[in-house]
Image 1 (tube, helix red, strand yellow):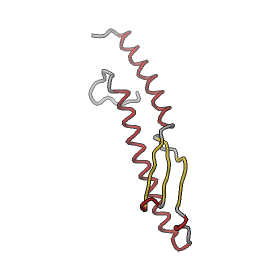
Image 2 (tube, rainbow, N blue to C red):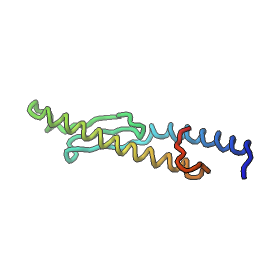
Image 3 (cartoon, rainbow, N blue to C red):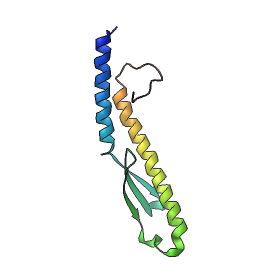
Image 4 (spheres, one colour):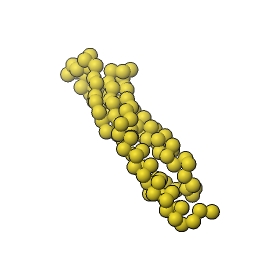
Length: 107
């Protein structure tokens, strides 16, 4: 059984790894798509929107409501993908740590 010093060192190492992982999430990009590719949103795994691409065919005033709906759908798709990538990255970090069941990172 590890002593208190070992546990503290493991916690400090885990915190350092978590910080690195959190910083790397902003460099991981995902793409949300809607309307069969007519609207695309690029975002970081932290959820920061990087870019929006709207097909020119949607730029008619009569298509305003559909464009708004497609942008919202593409954003939600990008957000879901960002959450999945973030969870996968955090799982990599926490998989080797001796954490009690149900313990949530970050501390």
